[in-house]
Length: 87
Image 1: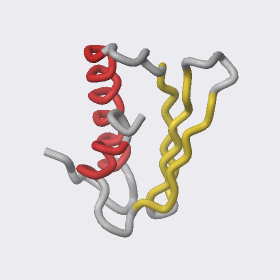
Image 2: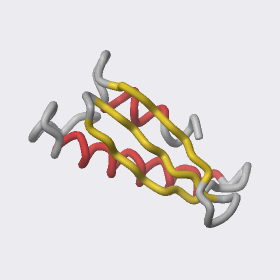
Image 3: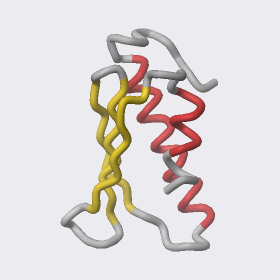
């Protein structure tokens, strides 16, 4: 998950904004994780299918999806309203 979640957090959130990061196994099966990011008191959640090791294209797709969704969340948040971060 460090190749999917951490790069987006590092590029989008500013120092001091990340309150908490949780990775929770989803009951749907072993290949799903719920990623919960709390930033400046606001919570973002996204369920991700965990790619198999070595599935580079799938890992890249998941990283792009997570980045895009986190970027949208931040742009709609009260702490960074209207900011397009990470570009």
